[in-house]
Length: 276
Image 1: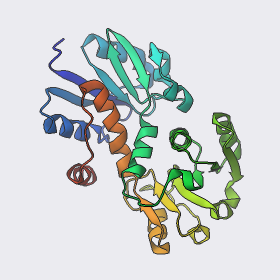
Image 2 (image 1 turned 60 degrees about the vertical axis):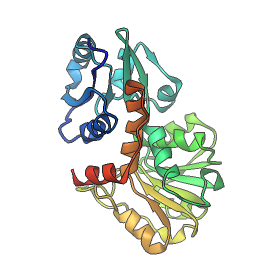
Image 3 (image 1 turned 135 degrees about the vertical axis):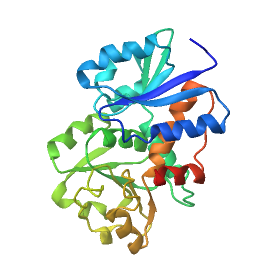
Image 4 (image 1 turned 120 degrees about the vertical axis):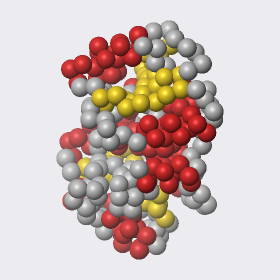
């Protein structure tokens, strides 16, 4: 293995749509580093042997996307507390033939908001309303608690699935999907982690007129960049943060683990991402 040439990748199935190679290749060029980052399609039943092949071929690490984020945990020699709490690994480092798993999605979510230049707004200012209870919601909730949100109101179309996430912290409360509009009345932050509003999916039906004027609205969806939810928020005069930055910021942490350099999210990179 050539230590001066760092090989990394993203694994998943399907994977051809991934924009991660664009992001990491941009940073490799920007920092003058010798390395590669590729998308590797791995089916679920071939995960163990394919990951072992990456180790044998001298990879320094890889990102993990659907459907492997949970299954990869069993293959890791060590999984950090953050990934355990979120219940998924999206970033793996390989050192001395061993796999070390972490999760950078919570970092990506928090940084996307913190770097948005929201003067006078803080996670600590009030309740956060989270729509959805999937893997992305777990990462978002972890970030909210870490950043000091006093409470999290979790709303999901299937209440039972939302109830499962209350074990993460006593600050998490569950509300019925039918009462989602009323839950916005005291919200400091409103986060959509569902697929509703994504291209090809139904819109998220919600009435933001009940939200306080200081509330921030964000969506982890970035195709389209301005979902129906964010467009409604802008018309209401609420501040919004798009979802594109979460993808970019979560990638920063992995890049730093493998390459020893923490890259920046620049307007040029954001533009390239959205044009791809």
